[in-house]
Length: 257
Image (cartoon, rainbow, N blue to C red; front, side, top):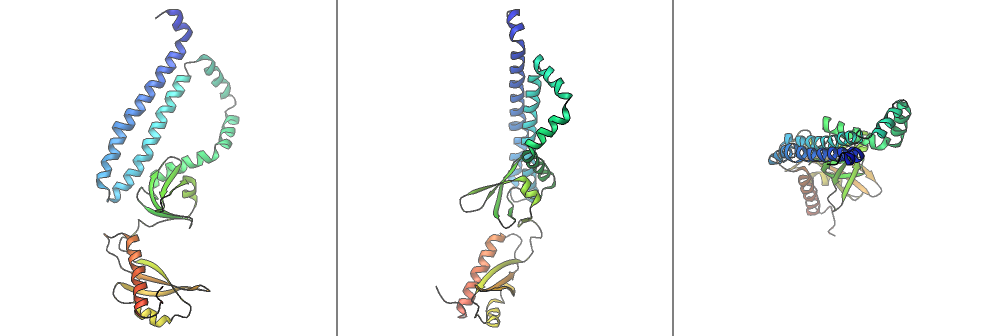
């Protein structure tokens, strides 16, 4: 190679080589190391450990990929003398730069930190069914660095910032005791004979019935039933509501629509 050409373009060539190496290294680590470990956990889809491991590996995978790329970019930029001088000037005003960056990227940084905390503490995992502040209800399909994807079951995908999950009240319906009773709600008219309704509903799979709310629209009954730990709670709740409707209609307490 012509020495004069290298003298003129050596910095650019070195920077390009550094970035290419960083990208290749990030792909190798992502695909063949962490990616293989993540795929291995999918063989134990029903295991509590599997869902937690998949969530932690998914966030770790993205963190490592991002870290390698950022290190490559910094190393590439350090090849340029002008940029090194500019960086030295910035060191004298680190506090000012930090304040500007922190103010401009507060939301992004907060979501990023929340994503890391979620990966460590595991309040929710991929596959969990959750409710967030009575606004979002669905199953977690992905936990990224700054957001969480939730399948609401209506054909739409809801993307929630991680900061909201950390700061809001989140109900995880997929954890806790698998033998905890299932609760289902059932509305009946205001003029319903509650004693007759209780007799029609109790017994068999329904273990208890209580009045949860009375409003101008009717009476909200709360039905409780046991569950087999191997069964899906959402399906069991639907079955319990259907059973309640059938029992009340058979007792003549609900009019056929």
